[in-house]
Length: 486
Image (cartoon, rainbow, N blue to C red; front, side, top):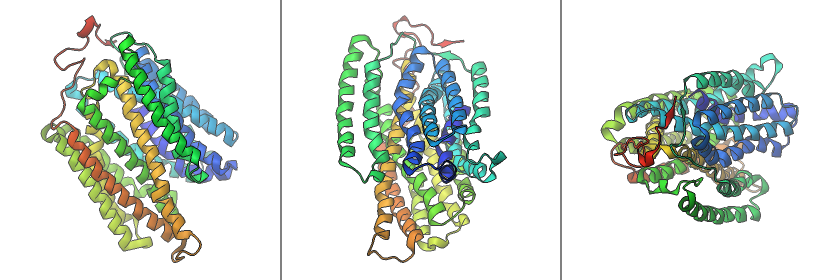
C-alpha cells in the first residue's frame, strides 16, 4: 500500500509543479509535455511485462527491485541539472513503476485467503482515492513552501524516505510467491505489446500540439494490426509451451473480461475529469494551486470512506448492484457539478463545489475497490501477476484515450471560443468554463456506459479460485507445489 500510494501521488503531483519547472529550468513546451508523457508511456508499455516477470521470478523480488529503482529515479528527477536529464529520469521512473505496481495486486491476490481479500481491496480503494487528490494538494504545498530554496524539486525528493520505508517493510513482511509451475518470459510478446501500446498512446499524448498530423492516425490504426498479430502469436505460444505474455484464457472468465471493459472506460473518465478539473480551477477561475488542492479534500475523504464500506459491508450483501449504484451516484454528482457551474459561473466558491464532489467521491468509492476484486477474483493464482498487469494497463490506456478526448471536448471548445471572429465576451476564463461544462457532459455520458457494461459482471460476489477452478485447492493441479514460499 505504501508503494501504491507513492506511485499514485507521483502521477498527479507533477502537474501542479509544471509552471515552476518550466520557469526554473527554462524548459520548452515539448520538454514539459515529455516530463508527463515520458512517465506515462514507459509505465503503460511495461506493465504487462512487469506483471509476468513477477509471476516468473517472484513477486516480492520484482516488487523490491521496482521500489528500489523508482526511489533512485525519483532522486535523479529531484537532482536533474537540465530538462533533458529530468525527462530521462521520468522515463526511468515510469519503467521502474511498471515493475512495482503490478506486484501490488498480485501479492494481495496470492497472499490473502478469499475471505480476507475484500477488506484488503477496500483499503486499496481508499488508497486510490487518497492518492488521486492528495497528490495535487501535496504538490501545491511543496511548491509554494519552496523548502530550502529547492523550488519544485521536493515533489520528487519526498519519494526517497517513502521508498526506503517500502523497501524495509516489504523485505521484512511480504512473503515470496510465484507461479506454481515454471514459466518463461515471452520476449516476442514483450516486443509486440510494447510496440502496439506505444503506437496507440504516443499519438494520443502528442496529437494536439502537433495539430493532429496524419502519421498519428496511421500509427493508431497500425496499432490495431499489431494487437491482432499479438493475439495470434500469443494463442500459438500458449499451445506450444504454455508461457504466453498475455494469458488469453483469462478473457474466457466472464468477470475478468467484463471488469476489464469497465476499467477501460473508467480510465477514460479519470483521464478526462482530473485534468480538466485542475485546469478549470487554476486557469479558468484563477485559483492558486493550494486553493484548488484544498477544494478536492471532500472528494478524497468521500472516496476513502465509501471504498471501505462498499467492500466490507455492501458488496457481500448486494453484489453487482453496489457497483451500478456507484456509477449512477457518480453520474449524479457530475450532473450537479454541471448545474452549479452553469448557475454560478466564474463566481463559484469552493464550498459550493463540496456537494457534487462528495457525491462523485461516494460513487467512485463504491466502484473502485469492489471492481478490482471482481476483475481478479476468478483468476488462477499462477496468472495473478499477468492479470494485474492487464488491469493496470487498460486503466492507463483508458487514461491516454481520455487525455486524447480532452483535446477535442475541452481544448476544442476553448479554441472555438477564442478564435478570430468568435464572441469575445468573458475572454479566457469564460472559454475555460464552457470547456469544463462540455467535458462534464461527456463524463456523465461515459458513466452511463459504465452502468450498462456492469450488467455483464456477476450478480453476486465471485468465488475466489486458487487454481484453475474453485473446486481445486491451490497447487493441486498438475502436482504443483504450494505457491507461497516463506
